[in-house]
Length: 95
Image (cartoon, rainbow, N blue to C red):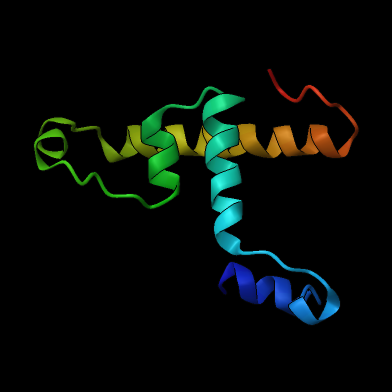
């Protein structure tokens, strides 16, 4: 299910005064991952399903799928922990 469909199913619709775009959630994740959590480009771009457009860089940057997925998994746990801390009232977050 797409993110926008999930929000609509929960009742978050423009008709109810909730105006947002799902791309903002991707941007929030990216900004938080880079600036607050200090995540690597590999993990963030993998999570966002971005493909390296620079063919030369893509040809030379080879990381095993196991390494990449482990880094991505760790980032998602760190992000979830950060969101939990915010929900619990910590204004500082993880770092």
